[in-house]
Length: 214
Image 1 (tube, rainbow, N blue to C red):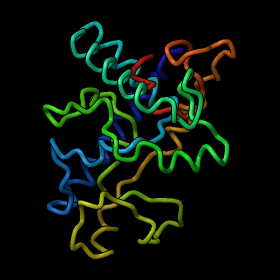
Image 2 (spheres, rainbow, N blue to C red):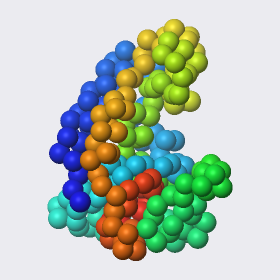
Image 3 (cartoon, one colour):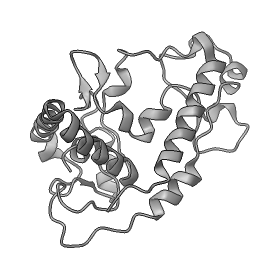
Image 4 (cartoon, helix red, strand yellow):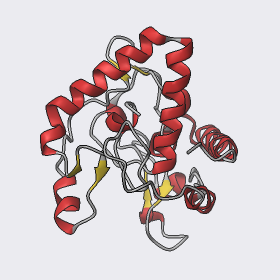
């Protein structure tokens, strides 16, 4: 399975939307290289995110094998420490979808640094291929509520300190969820015989650590 070609368009749209939101936000958006708060705490990524990371790792294995090896070491160490408590299948890396699994995930590895975070530089070593959650974090983005409801806008807690609801709403970042879902629909479900996260990708959510080892 290969990354849908239109993923480049999705990334371009999202990155342009972030840049525009950052321009409107000005000093209210404090996101800077080296600020790593958003790099701590595990979060779910979809199959499109996972395949993008897989493409990035393939590129690094060819162009910077030392860095790729270090990322793999970090991912393996992360799974070694937290894999036994993983709320899903630790063989495939797929998150469970039961109510109990979802409840467990709420408190799972919440303070742990992402294995893609370089502790020496404070930067993401797969920044070019990072998941959509990472690309939209910081500016106000709409949560599950009707348009026009300023209370439905979520943003990084370090940003927009002292801003009014109107100022926050004026900096809203649109997210192309429909295009992302369209691309996700192009990814067929994995073959049932896949037995590990290093083999055929499995449709469904996973986390960064497993995706780095594909």
